[in-house]
Image (cartoon, rainbow, N blue to C red):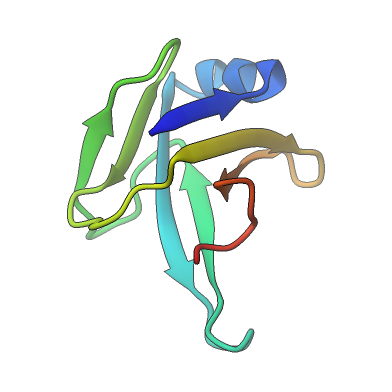
Length: 93
């Protein structure tokens, strides 16, 4: 998987501990669309595995069967957080 992080996203990840956890989340009200969530700490009850990246630690769910070819990381302004895009999309297909 090729990780493409904007300089702002990389700086925010470093400022919040140098780790980013990312996982797919299936919404209940949006027709079952699966989106990506991110956090600087792992959510309770989920196991993660590290992936090699430059500049920070990226962790994905241990049981994730399929990784994207590319993972894009950008900064969302309000609230300020890292947003992840799977192969350039806001949802997982």
